[in-house]
Image (cartoon, rainbow, N blue to C red; front, side, top):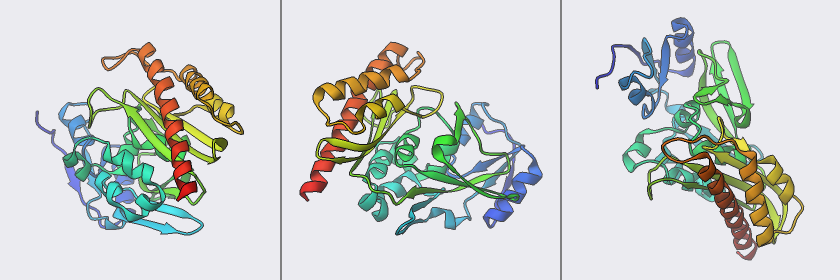
Length: 293
């Protein structure tokens, strides 16, 4: 299939890009990596009159760390950029590992973290682990700049709070202590598959005692969701295999999956129980490694 006709703009900076989006008044889409947008256009899911490319905005390709603030990731950082980043591999390896498990190598060279978030696809891999790590996003427009928690960014499948004239420019992960974090997913292929179920866990633990924990599920609700009841069950508890099984079942009861070609509602709930349990266990194993290092 062919792309429909469209106007193409290449602004020199974020301010010019925002002004273009405001002037086009909803008839334009932002083009970063294009791995979601261009297939949507080819398949007539989307038909923007114009594309505003971010390819000249090299400041959005940086990853920086500031003590006391955290890691700032530019929205144009590619998935392979996340995989290779020394800052992430040292401080938030779970993000690099999540990116490495996404799509094919070629797609990871083009796809961006900003695009993965803005597409707001329920099965996207990066939002669950970013939410588990308390990430926030910066949105810029000609009207100003605002920062919101990523947890509050999504409003439904392919829907979010981003306005038509706004550009997601940065993702910030706060400089907070964690002893283990992990994202695990179940797909229908060994690699490069969309998540049928995703489970992200970030925790602070002493031995097997959990002091703080965040559990975020993907692909089993209209948006990435916190498993709050499972978090409450684990907080302050010493983890046993029996408690892990209970936490998995509680998380499974909290989610609201659909049935589709990739899995039934019942199957997804069963996989939530399994992968929540596995993710908690792996995060606790990281705690033990850190303690003994």
